[in-house]
Image 1 (spheres, rainbow, N blue to C red):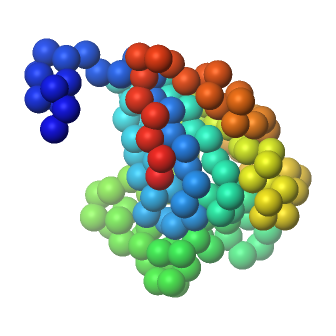
Image 2: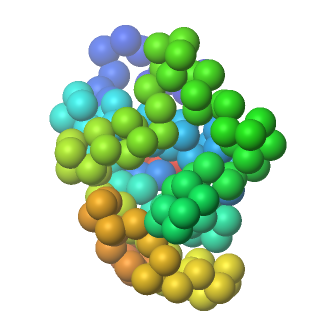
Length: 150
């Protein structure tokens, strides 16, 4: 355990920067949990979606929103999110909306879009998505913040 983690008086990070690269339901869901929680306590948060995680932000084209097709959700026939909501855990759409309402910054990796062959027009329109690159993500981070990869 780091000294800061063992010191109850240690200040929390002044910003949370999350690199969301894994395309599994559980990891993307938890990135939304962390970002919304940080924003709820007044800590600015940025989500940088790239590679397979970008599929979570694809629009509903008749088969449901893109996150429904992520491994861990698709494998259960959509039961993972439904089960969590029945147990009182915030669902994917609820967390996504909370992040947007709380001012979490969503950056969509331009290179990641090209890498998986996803057009920006296929992304959701109800979430404030900004198409940019790694340099933008790194410039947005804070020296007093925390950067996590999910």
